[in-house]
Length: 274
Image 1: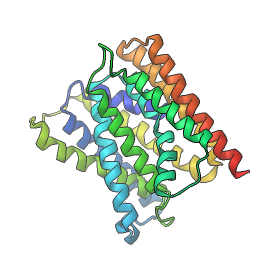
Image 2: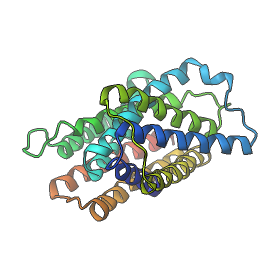
Image 3: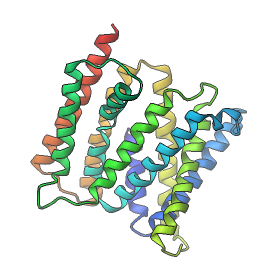
């Protein structure tokens, strides 16, 4: 989670100099090459037939939406608020599992889901003077990641972490190309500092993705998942120290509501299994 937060910070910093579409393309290219190299070292087949399975196509669609809108949110809105909204992902994953996979969700978890949604609204403050429509970019990105996580549950076991990482970053390249038609900004030759920033983002992104997949595939999900909320602490800290963002009491309340709801849902899910 610390590596994910650093990846976000470096991507946001790169977007201060480069067009967002160019950041997407270069960041995706770097990550795809890194995972391709890691797959080659392990003699894993990147171009596996299961990549074209229906569930992987659904995963690709959600990943495209999640990556594009989340990076747009990083570039255009405060890192702290973007990270806070992202913490609602587990809540929406449970909601999606109940609606689409017909998983049993009791009234307590439904109540926690509703409270978690209120937490997102507290962070967004749609009725306040400080509300920005751009904050909805983070919401759309979060929904995309939720759909991706749901689709990942049915992803073929034959696809390794490196293969999933390769196609995840390949999706970022495609998102950048598509967004370039909307952005309509000419690509520029990146400076040395911009390239170094993107290289750092790729390095932390590869470490973060590999660590998360390793943890989720080898550890107890109920034990590992709560640690995802530590990303909020790292994101807020980097936002304050690196980008001079301010955190008010209302945002802290919203963050607490989101994290508390998510942890309660995970606790109830674990208790139901036992």
